[in-house]
Amino acid sequence: MAAVGFGLGAMGAAYGVVGAGLRLLAWRTSALPESIAVLRGWPLAAAAASMAVAAVSVAVVAARSVGSPTLVWSWWKTGLALGAAGVAAWLLGARTGWHWGLSVTGPARDLFEAIVFRRTQQLGWGAALLVGLPVGAWLSARCRGRVAWRLPVLREVPRRLAGGVLMGAGGTLAAGCNIGNALTGLSILSTNSALATAGIALGVATAVYGPALAPGRRDPVPAKGTR
Amino acid sequence: MMWSLSGFALGIGLGFVVHRGDFCMHSALRGAVCGRVDPSLPAYLLALAVQLAGVNALAGAGRITVALPPVELGGAVVGGLMFGIGMVLAKG
Image: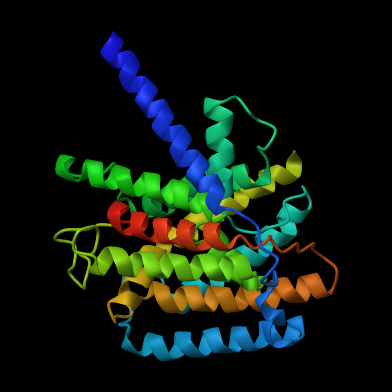
């Protein structure tokens, strides 16, 4: 019993230290402008338009080396649908006071807090979005008639769990994941989201090329179906 | 309450699109880092462009409220770094 109590205490202390450390990192700075549009003194519309043109150009050039898929939507169909969903999220969410657009990390935390700590006041439009997400994915899969629960190989469970913890803590610290930051935040030219997006790309590179972090995972082509 | 249900409906649509398009930011970024183009990369860039045009036009017309988040330099960079590493470890 004492050992269990000590273990729990150590876990609690570790949680507290990590939490305090993470909060220390999240200091606010006014040294940088909140919008990347004002970095060069550009008006917002011009900055947004040129960024959009640049993104489409890179997409078209990059897509030249992509084969046309047979089972899934083409990249442009997926991109257009995703972009439309993003704009719709701003319009629909605004009706309920959700002024952000598509997001996953924030709503995930709201749901977690509601379930674990019974703090339900944050539950709203974002949480509803997140609850609908797997339903839609399931529907899409069901329409094709291939739905099955897939469990990771036991040997991989610790690594996947560690990855999940890093994603949760990192996403919270960075005020969003790759949807909230790389898609939604970048579209309103948020400096914080641009920094977080750069951090995420750097993190992926670190994990792919860092031998100590992901032994045996340095294959440049991840196997399909392992996502 | 009714308008929150629109979030649920859009979530279903989003889940459908993400699954049907095999959209995965992990694949997109991992491909880019490894010098390979995953179809999710141009899809992401196109979605970003559509949002850049749509959201800023709506904001300019006063239809939506856009409030930029404060800049938390350490949190954004270190949090992003942790998220990116975690994404590769968790494979998704």
